[in-house]
Image (cartoon, rainbow, N blue to C red):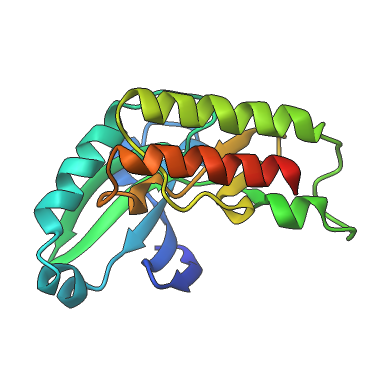
Length: 173
């Protein structure tokens, strides 16, 4: 583990080096790991549901979706490995500050990327269920990634319609 990236209701996210990717270039070796509260996940009885959901996420292939690699346990502590991103969330990107991001992105382009990512997930029956501007990430190279699908394991097809409404709110705001 290299360092802690954040703590929240979904668990602690850390940056780490994936030893299985040792032959890859340095940047490709780095991953993000979400470490869950084992007791909370077990008490909710949702470990197997979460595992099934992660298996679905692993099949998604879209340049605007955060890539999910694996879900496993270490000494009883469940964790999720995923793509490590460098950059900032959409609200941070559009805030008038001295950002490390030295380029301009057309917000229409960002919305098209998010729409395409949602369309890919929805085609597989996966709803986001919590679409907000904070779930949209702009990388240091200007790529757009939709995050948060890992937390949508208890969503259903009806939530896809809610995603459409949430997307419409994003467009209006």
